Picture 1 (cartoon, one colour):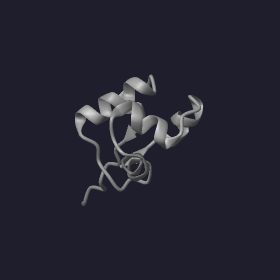
Picture 2: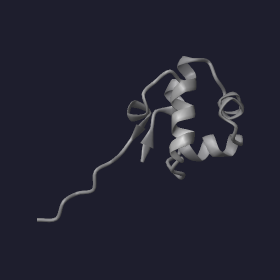
Picture 3: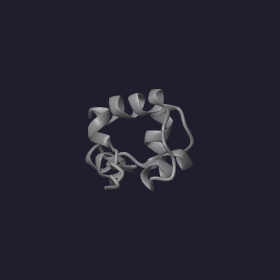
Picture 4: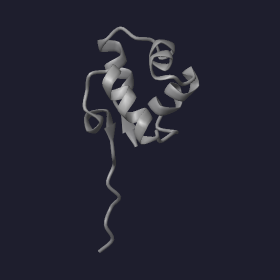
Length: 69
């Protein structure tokens, strides 16, 4: 899964640590989310969307798997 967290953080002038503190997680969690190495819980995704003032579906971009024919 890809995310726009880094881009949106920059828009609001937030560091990874700032965002982590606002949503109640460690900075490393934000780092792993930005790198696509961690899928957030629904609550964490919701909290991030509120801080970044952006709908969840505009932050977390799900890649559809290729269909086999």
